[in-house]
Amino acid sequence: MTCLVVFFLFLWWAEGNLDPYMRRILNLIAINVIWAVTFNLIYGYTGQFSLGHAGFIAIGAYSAALLTMPLAQKVQNFFLVPLISPLNAIELPFLPSLVIAAVMAGLVGVLVGIPSLQLRGDYMALVTLGFAEVIRVIGMNLQSVTNGSLGLKGIPGYTNLLWSWGCAAVTIFIVWTLGSSSYGRAFKAIREDEVAAETTGVSLFYHKLMAFTVAALLTGLGGALLANLISTIDPNLFTFMLSYQVVTVTVLGGVGSLTGSVVASAIYVSLFELLRPIDQPIVIGSLTIPGRPGMRMVMFSVVFLLVILFYRRGLMGSTEFSWQWLASKLRFGRSIGRQET
Amino acid sequence: MTVLKTEGLTKHFGGLVAVSDFNVEIEKGELVGLIGPNGSGKTTIFNLITGLYKPTEGEIVFDGRNISGWRPDRITGLGIARTFQNIRLFTELSVLDNVRVGYHLRLDSSPFVAAVGLPTYRREEAEITEKSMQLLDIVELDDVAQEKAGGLPYGQQRKLEIARALATQPQLLLLDEPAAGMNPEEIRGLMDFIHRIMHMFELTVFLVEHHMRMIMGICPRILVLDHGVTIAHGTPVEIQNDPKVIEAYLGVEEEEDADY
Image (cartoon, rainbow over all chains, first blue to last red):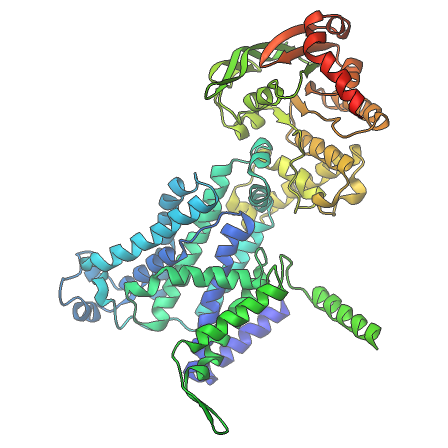
């Protein structure tokens, strides 16, 4: 609890004192935390492999963008095809926009969940993947709402560290408390054995849909924060790669571990920035390595591979971080050291 | 009072007739056994009663209600619980959590109330935990409550599965080969245990078993199944002397005994 207070005090200080680049990184970490945690709710807790995150992120991002954008900006953006009627006269503050964006994503979550959750395993992954692509293609072609592939520019940058980490904290709180309640046990029972869960009185469909909808809702929230952070969005931001990124972060942190998701998001985003110099030419003595854009992706894959090799179940496994856990790890490490000497 | 009644229950898998025209009537408080060689359709009947399979023909009436074609979780909610032949626990969950899942269907708190952790939910949760510990006490697993279910030895896993089934507060308990893999000593313990829980929870038990000695020992009434057809029905003595049963089942059993 005190940690939390200290952390938010730090954020409050950071908002005023850190440079925009650092703040951007911290914001992105928070948004990735939201996505990884919600994916953990669907996959880590309930065992349903969904690849639809990009779709929910897109819905959240577009909803928030269209609601928060100033009217003059809207006219400028939609110069080819004008924006349809109710939206072109609306400009809302940030909080209601966030809420509406999340609810929109949640509603679509229900609509997508009803058919796709009837399927199991790989089939469910395929259908949700298809859904995310459908959303992207709609974004491309529904010019009167999304401005097509031109995208939206000049979205107000409302997202700051307190908003992003506040939303991340809310997400973690909801997923954690729901996950450790009786409903969470039902989710995990479904993950473990659907047939046994069903005959123990757990309604498969109801609980899967609940997990899926809550996850979709919060994922949309993350999308809304993203739109108001980067201020420019277009449909190609929300490709399959984005869903894949969410899966990567979650697996990296440990499936079923929320603290793992937090740690992994931090590592993922910062590593991505730290590895940036690799894309530039490097001079070592007389040797010059030419810069190759995308080199850091290769390096990143190597790091990812190493993690999976040495920590097969992710950095945290399915355990949660606690000070006792850290202490026991350290003690274990020391006792090994002693044995060697 | 009749608890369970099936009428002309039939299940086809493509061209294969797994169960044909199965009729049974089980009174409250009874212990009925169902035996038959491997592949004779015993487990299929359990899957039909619990809703995992939909019957091709026929009716299942439980507690006066026609439940054929109902979803498994609704049937469990009505009061039928079961165990599985090849134990199906939630292996990564703790022993206590396995039992607590059984109480989930009687939970009153909505997901919202549970997620926010309102006092009404916390009271319910405490109650569930207390009842679960009592159940674990009865099956003598209270000292391993925090351990992972998958890590328990075989015999304890069987008991935990029964405890989980009891947590759903059933009227009718279906046990699918509860004695599989047990030695004679353990089987005697299991027989006592079944009698004890029947008395304690006012249960009706329908039991599938491969093990002749056990079923003859505890079931006052037995049905014999062969290739999906009921070939005999009666007391253990009647069954033992039925020529059709001896031909279909007991002959096989003796050969199996020789294998040991």
